[in-house]
Amino acid sequence: MICYYITDRRQFAGDAREQWRRLLAKIAEAARAGIDYIQLRERDLMPQELEILAQEAVETIRQVYAGDAANHLSNASPKKRRTRLLINSRVDIALAAGADGVHLRSGDLAASEARVIWDRAATKGKPGMAKEPFLVAVSCHTLAELRSAESHGADFSVFAPVFEKVTFPQAQGIGLQALRKACSQGFRPANLEGVGAGHMPVLALGGVTMDNAAACLEAGAAGIAAIRLFQDHDVAETLSELRELRVR
Image (cartoon, rainbow, N blue to C red; front, side):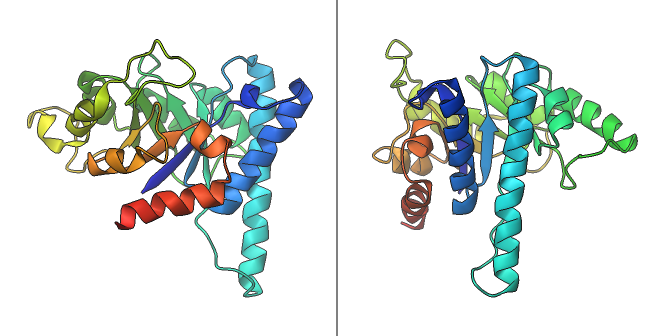
């Protein structure tokens, strides 16, 4: 199961400096817990500020991973898969910060275009680029957007909002039935150009809690994407509970 923490530092208490500090601490906590992906979503920041935060987030995860590797060598703890960091919408900032990929909105450039930009930078040997393959996630709200994301080679999509958003009561959830269709391979036309033999993972987002996460997984979701579910709770405990749901 894929677990995807989406950041929002403004939900932390304190002034701007304290929110920044607490966000980096939460990113470190999430990485130590072994969360799969983190989306740095701070949309209110100016590009220069976002780049600085992205660089600090990359370094924070790197330090956690380096510590885990050292512990593994000393047999103090098992080695975990490294948490991957994606930057919201900005391929250029992902490149500059040495992040692992980008999270695109449905109205942004296509996933295939983002890969072209990344590949061109790779051929020029840009310093600081992640050694692992560039990741592209896409936010989708309709089946048509899902088809487009997969046809352009997105690694996975985030389908939202499944339930009503807590922070935006007026935003109506699309429901489990829509999520079930989104997670089914049957909705894709067999002749859709560009779609490979694989099945793009679809993550559930929007009002997902521990009470309804199991229903999302039963509907076929490959994982859970959330802000509050991870940011407002102990990440290790939350991951343990979610993975237990998958076992059932």
